[in-house]
Image 1 (cartoon, rainbow over the protein chains, first blue to last red):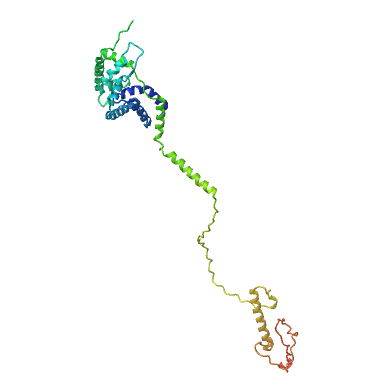
Image 2 (cartoon, rainbow over the protein chains, first blue to last red):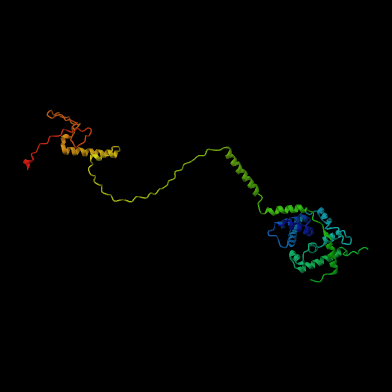
Amino acid sequence: MDADLLGYLIDRYSAALVLYAGTWCRTPEDVVQEVFIKFVRQSPTPMNAAGWLYRAARNAAISAGRSERRRTNHEGAAAAKAELLFVPPDDQTGLDASQASEALKQLPDEQREVIVAHIWGGLTFEQISDLTGGSAATAWRRYTAGLNQLKQLMGEPCHRPTKK
Amino acid sequence: MPPPDEEIDRLHDALKRLAPQPANFSRDALLFAAGQASTKGRIPVWFWPSVSGLLACVCLVLTCFLISPTEISIKYVEVAKTVYVERPAVLSPQPKPVLPPLTSSELPVLSTPVNLEVAERQRMWQIRQEVMRWGVEMLPPSKMAEPIPSPSKPPMNPVVIAPPTFAIPGIIIPKKRQLPDLDWEELD
């Protein structure tokens, strides 16, 4: 595999994949690294690299989450809760990163998965339906339901008035 | 799919502006690990250590041979080899040509066994001719029998021999007899 292509995929998808894998496990970085290494070993290289990466990350994260649940402790749970999912934006007119992180963590997994894959992963609903195993309409319904729930959790902070 | 709600669109745009936390791992380390992983599947891990160990053993054996050279022993092995020779055509036996009696002038040089045999035959033939011509008296006395002295006979002169004969060593030829003079007229 071309090293430039791998570098591009890491730059483009690693952060979103970490956020995506964080839906199911507390060590998404490890999962994503393993996914990229698995991707390199694929012969031939998958045509839809993004879809393959998200599918592999999902499977690996679910597997890692199962392993983690066997050794769950309070410290780990607290640390996971305090983890910030987003970089605080320089633009003060945008959403609060910590509030968005908390709200996103409270979403059900199936809604959170669709939202992360569509917004930050750039996958279409057809690709998400391939990932999750449902239909594109189901993915879209989950997406809208998740956003509505986010809106309620964040207290309608979607559009802050700009200070003039 | 139903048309998107404006509120949802706005929330979508606001969420999209949030950047996820960058991955908490080294990009270079991941690339390095990926490079290692890409070559692992092709060549087994034990391949190169095994090759190097094998070559080291070969070098050790060759060094031992170099240090303690042994004499080269040549072994001769007998290999049975069948040689086929063409058999000569069997010729019908030809009758031996009857050789004419040899004359004294045709005597060969006595050097080989074959020539000696021929010479012996020649000698016997010569003796036979002498006997036929001069009688058995010309033969030499036998060595086994005692020679009987005959005082009536004059001693033979060994020097005088018959004119057409040759002197043979060891053979004493008696003196030529005087043939009686025949009266040819009376015979007619």
